[in-house]
Image (cartoon, rainbow, N blue to C red; front, side, top):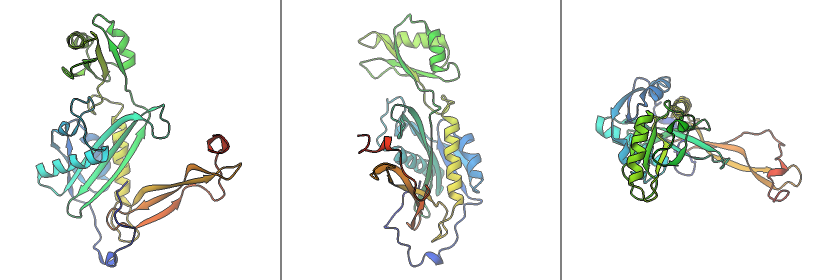
Length: 298
């Protein structure tokens, strides 16, 4: 979803703007965790040639928390892209950022939300999209030295997924990452438990993209959605990147007519000129489930 600018008015010279195309253009992907095979093929469909540039993206925050992420996932993805652009001396940058946490619609479920962005410095715009999945392996457990590590195999999908081991409490280090072998995990648990006041170590899924295969299809899906957005042109100025930027809620309850917080329309927007248009996503006359009504089911 592209961040719209302005109040939706179309500039007077929008019709005279040259048609923008990314066909044959080169963009750099800032990555440390093997994301190029996930992002480059989908964006090739929009004409972009995406190549990787090695950037220490951990400086913008880590899943393990040893380096806090100061901004939102979108802010971080944009910052990553700009780091890659600066390193490669290019005006087009691509990056992705993921967040693992409660699903926005079902907070009791754990979801993987992945964002992929294109930053175009020449036009001073950002185009982005995202994908959300519940098919994420994300677990954590406190264990003591001597714990039967074979019991963790299914819980953490070892060795398919890697794990991180850290002290359960107290000092933030050591943090031992990318572990798949049970002997290595046992040794890491002994080291980290010795540093923890409670004598335990915390074992958790290593959520970095090259260590967490259940994240990788979601990153690819986000890149595919971004490619589709780049193929969609603004009806006002013809710029690429037209697509959903907001939603309109308020569907009447089937029993009492009270507006229920369900989406009734999406707002499509342009990252270049700020034009916006409402698009219905439900049929006229649709009503909401009374079970979701704040009046009928408070």
